[in-house]
Length: 90
Image 1: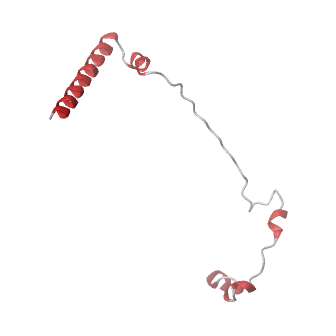
Image 2: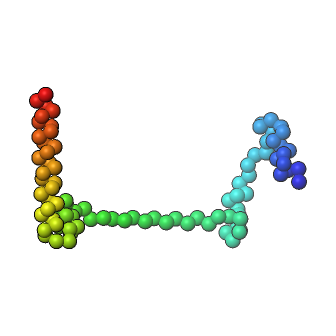
């Protein structure tokens, strides 16, 4: 079919001579298999905000692991503070 290769004939004419869109689209039957049905899905996942201490208490399997982790965090914090102070002094 020539229409599939070159398109409809009105495309060869100036745009002012093109046919005007009709409102027949609104009058389509609801059971037309060519019409895509509108489906909307809205999903929200809410997560409760918990503070860092509560998170760490639930994260670690034992009190000993929690204490070791907090000790390492505090050591790292003191190291970063000392590096910042040395950088400011120099």
